[in-house]
Amino acid sequence: MNGFWAGVAAYSIWGLVPIYWKLLKHVPAIQVLGHRIVWSLAVLVVLVTAMRRRGLLQVEARSVAIYAAAAALIAFNWFLYIYAVNAGFIVETSLGYYITPLVNVLFGVVFFRERMRPAQWAAVALAAAGVVPLTWAYGALPWIAFGLAASFGTYGLAKKKAPLDPLEGLTLETALLAPLAMLYLGMLHRSGEGAFLHTGVVSDALMIGGGVVTTVPLLLFAAAVRTVPLSVIGILQYIGPTLQFLLGVFVYDEPFSRAQLVGFSIVWVALALYAGDSLRARRDSAVTPAFDEGTVRR
Image (cartoon, rainbow, N blue to C red):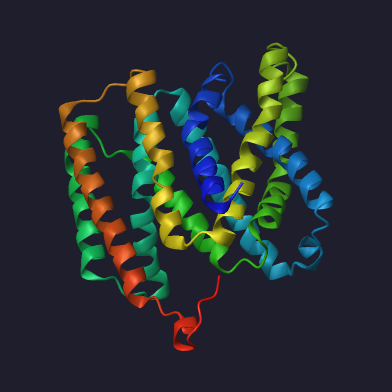
């Protein structure tokens, strides 16, 4: 599979994963999260061992602190997402991942003093304007969307200075979370409140499979970013929330009012402006030394 199709596959899985979590609707979200952490670690340890990765053995204490913060953020993001999907807020989760790139741009300005181009400012302003009709439609700020965008954006900030590659980094993060998850699940099992081994073989298999659902798209994404330009990755990332949106509206019949349509339309225009500007900036700044030397490298 080439890099482009690996990227398409990764974002498609992330977009369709609500179907998977919906099958565990009968299990409390916090228990699903615990099993996702434990079984993801099992899969990741196997992968890291098979690939003979040794980066985990060279992590400094300061880096462990960074990964501990990242672990807390991704755990919150995972929990909020699972909760939202099974509480009937798939459409709102899509909004969260639509606006995440714009949150990342703002974080770049605030924390790294990056300069935003006029079109980027316009995109952020438009997205902010789109929140007004959405707030009217929901009767409150869309806190699930903002929670997902803020937690994932902050997770990205934490990973900016993290030394490990995505596979090793996620392995360390889940390893830091796993003791708490196992302790919690063990207490539930002893009290008879745990879903695992008490809700049927299919349910157990789905909880175990959460580890595979977590790691497979990550590996596909890692394969994509090695060979595909970031400008293309920037466009592919909208596959996920678009599929989530379509699932929420057309498969799970979540309410979608005219006010929500107006708000989402404004956000979509903002994202189109942002994506177009990013592509144009990349094209304008592209410099290929090979042409200066009179050759074309492939």
